[in-house]
Amino acid sequence: MADTTPSTPLGVPEHESCNTPVIHAFKAFLGTFGFAVEAERDVGGLRSGDTAYDHWLREAELAWERTSRDALAVFQTEALQPSDQPLRQTAMLIRHALASESHDDFVSVQAMLDAEPLTFMATGTSPMACRANEMIGTAIGRLDQIAAMSMILNDPELDDPASWSA
Image (cartoon, rainbow, N blue to C red; front, side, top):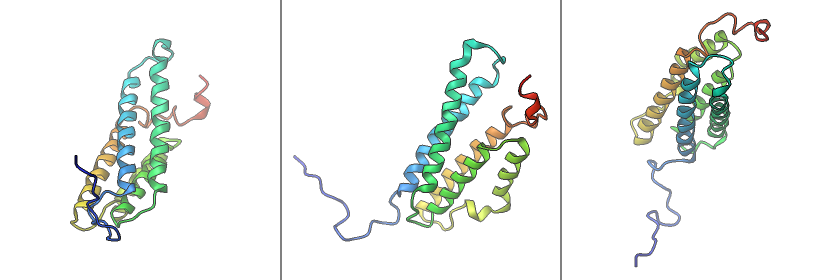
């Protein structure tokens, strides 16, 4: 039988191409974010007040809660490599965008991606920088999908708390 042998000798630093805890946390975040986008699509076309689909609404709410929690977990994970920092910043920006109270808030948070592009991009050509940029691109693509959905569209009634009780 084969014995387990570590590939990195004791006392030798791991190669810079190893996945870090931030990368693992961001992968989990991307999964929950993707699930939340799909859950939101499920409820996007429902008639309001149709109780037959209450479980879909609850599933979407829980998906957004998990997405927010996972984004926070990414941000709270210690950055070990330079490519970790843009992942952390992207997760926090998306968490902030999803917590927006209005369309205008969402748009202003989303605009930060264009205003500060280097904050949300890993520099260099290392495998980890390239992978981080791919994951950031996926997350930004999902944020763009959310921006196009009815939950974020500029509906003045949705931004007016007085209309919520109607």
